[in-house]
Length: 194
Image: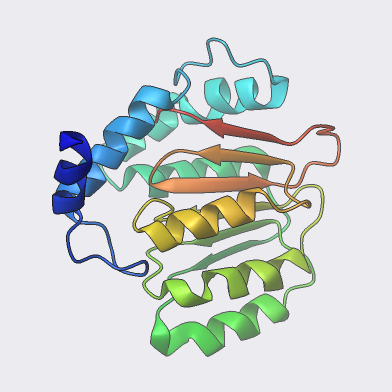
């Protein structure tokens, strides 16, 4: 009973579409960290995910670059180098750029890698996702920042990762990655320490 009251104080006054307070975000991070798989790949039975962890997440280029720039920016840069997607679209969507973002998505033939960073207006995240679904193929990757920034962003993340076209999701707490690999026979969702 005491824990429930404590958590409601940490997140006092926050509606579904409001960002979590710092103490509540810290609580969410500790929950993520406790539940996440080892960041070295131990116990991961998917060969693709094991390779992703050992060759991408734990690559020395990512960790060295992360010292001089944003850790997730370095990760996205290395994913692009490693997988060599046919197209790369990076967006920082806000209310002023939403129409431009939708035009850019609709103008794509196919999505290689799509990275939505610092998404401020959570109302349209699923609109972007639905538009992107029309452009994905077996090699597409969608990367979204802020998947645990609010209760609405967590609901959106759960909706996206449970979509039937998504075959694999990787939750790195600050960033979520969706894969559409046709060779992935069973849908898998991973939470990995990074």
